[in-house]
Length: 71
Ligand SMILES: [Zn+2]
Image (cartoon, rainbow, N blue to C red; front, side, top):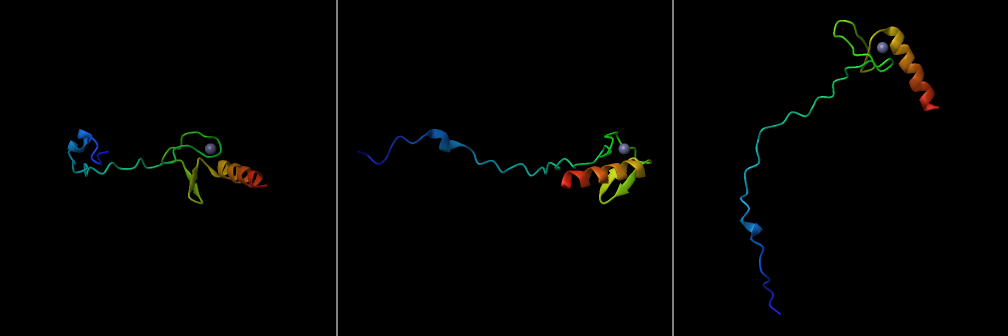
């Protein structure tokens, strides 16, 4: 048995320098309210605990919901 088996010519593959184009990772922008899932407009947003809501009401709603889910 010959140790040298037919080498696949795939070794020809050119080692291309990987494109250094840093594809920006799609920023996960929170666009919707966590409570009502409505798109949040820049001007009208309520920011709490790193999350956006449309207003305080929605924030409360979302927090209550989160609490319930924790149970
Ligand atoms: Zn909302």
